[in-house]
Image (cartoon, helix red, strand yellow):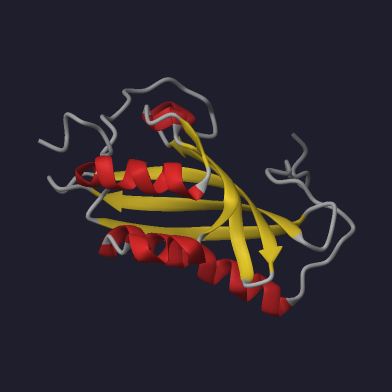
Length: 166
């Protein structure tokens, strides 16, 4: 890679996202962590579209469709959520139309035994009549082998696992 070249990690388009929309999307990403930390499942309508695709397959939790399925997972697996989840490194880019955007962000989670883990989220957010909502969320655990060099390393046990919840 040339010194001044940069690999794009999210899709870009000619559509612009204004500052107010960017702020609303950033707050949506932060709200997700608040809802998880507080276990305030009543706020699910402020997070997701009705038809959300919630891909937690890399956390061994499957791919779910719809808010009801997400809510059921949250109730059934409440003990697996980190005690604290922090959204960071949020980058928003325009999608093909004015009503959707692509988001990539990082999440840091602190587990019940003090372990810290990192996840990369890739989302599609959609403008709705009541504001921006997550239409598609994919989580990918960050592992030691995820470094820029791609070198293999030991994979830490994820903090969101049945074994760590005991």
